[in-house]
Image (cartoon, rainbow, N blue to C red; front, side, top):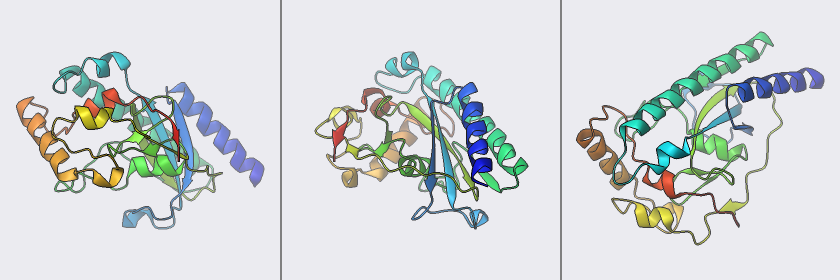
Length: 224
């Protein structure tokens, strides 16, 4: 049984790497809010794709059309990879539920079925920064995530013992002042209002994107 699970893990990791996924981790889903359909699925697989530095660096005072297209492309790729991973797990006799990379189920709060960044943090891939973004040691906040929920027992990792230290870059650049000096000071309502304004002024449709805090976050590592 152990050898079978290890073989499945190796198969998944080789598969996602071929698709350009730079981060892959596993988490137990304690204290993670899950949809009713996920009953019995107590493990999560978190996959992360690195954003293009050229596109992110080009963001100056508003989200660009290139960023919007890139955002859509990456979400589509992540969703496709999550479907393939789901198929692999099911072939091995386990259950799996792919959670779309960017699907809104609550438009008032602009949230999906699960928190991808929380699962990524539990999988040891990142920490939650003061900007409320998932921050990685190597790529900062320049990663997008997708999650697969499963009953396949997986070797889970320890959470990273890092935080943002005294870095204030996201605080200083935020166009609406939503980011405080600690993660519990993040003003979600102010952020959502700014995203709505950008969506309207830049003709972004239903895509709520900004990119300022993503751009400046370099993942400075400070021990807790």
